[in-house]
Length: 635
Image (cartoon, rainbow, N blue to C red):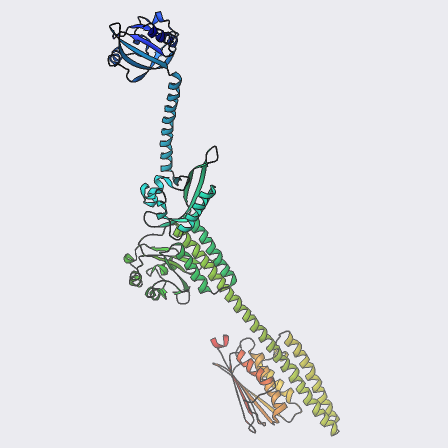
């Protein structure tokens, strides 16, 4: 018994001994030290005097439930003598000592342990709250968020990711998420993801992800590793961001650049416009496009480039009229604004194209006018889709871009054509001016020299017969002809009217010219003028004078004729100029090295007239020029 008492007083664990009614009958020094009381003070106290917020009935019930050998441990907060509190772990046991039934309570201080446990519990609660907040944030954030284990096994996908793909967490966990990736992009994505797992470095890659309705959109997959303090990879976190709009915008910019390069190179317009339709069709795969050009002369629309529209629809809209009650393209030109037919079947003006469109599976159409920089309508850009409805804002923006690019291509093509035509007209004008100068020089210098030679030859004959006065007259005429030819050549270079026409009408100028050219020769020249000379178009009198001069020169030089007769007839339908000689004649179809006949023909054609040359060996020559008046003459 003494040994038991010695053990009771010296053990380190605090021990209280109490009656079943709760009164403490003994306590060891360790118990006194635990609460700051003396053993004497503890004797006679009851547990609810020491336990904070003690419930007497609850404590008595716990003491009554104590069993021999000890029961379960409970935690209580006890009040020390100095007013402080301690967390104590209590264990109750029932025993018999000296014929008395007592309750033994062993206890030890667990204040620090309790504080630690409380802190852990609080931290766990905070972590649970943070976890709930994190899950709430990840599930409600616009992005698609995921996490994976170090081996790449996906263990979390936020609700946005699951809702977008239509997959459940069970289906997408691990590597099941790959079922939502486009088959063409999956090998690249898996290969890149496995390479990241090996490297342990962050990375990103673009690929297409299937939406719950089967539509694929471009996404940027980005993964970031998480390492612990030792550098060990413990987790992967990532986000999948929708970049489809950006990818489409980049594709449109690339296509626009390519189209502008085609326009700058001067590629054929149909090819440029076909590529422009392809731009829209590539951006919206279910759309078919066409470009029609506005024919201002007929007020109709014509296809400007090959189209993927059904052939029946192509034929139905090709040549369509422009007006307020025509198809969408005709109305777009008429009203100079976009026309949207949300349902072709219900279009009240669709009789010309409805059956062809519906037969090709097309249900809606919107057509935008292609406007030139000056506001003139060049044509239309039309889009057809297989579903009824209005264009989306993105479709609307791209339609406007395509219509603008089409206007650039069409205007540049027309400007290039006009420049080419202008250059051709300039080249023709240069050639015509050279021919004019050649004709005028021929008609002035060559024909003048011919007259001078004839007069000089006549003077030589007169001197040979000792007819000095007659010879001097021929020499004076030769001198006068030379001076006149020189003056005419100078005036021709300056593109002025012939001197002979400055002060007299055409008939008088021809009569004086014929007289001077045949004076002193064996050729008798006669001129008949019939009708009242009207006000002739510019250049007619000059050219007719040159034609008469050239024909008479050819007669003097080559025909050996004795008679030269001409008729200048002015009538209501035009002018007829006929010249005839009785010379040796020639073959009009034979090659002629001279410029005279060619110059006559060019002058007649330049005036819009007709030239007839009739001649044969021994039967003289007859030349007829007919110049019509009115609209033909004006043109």
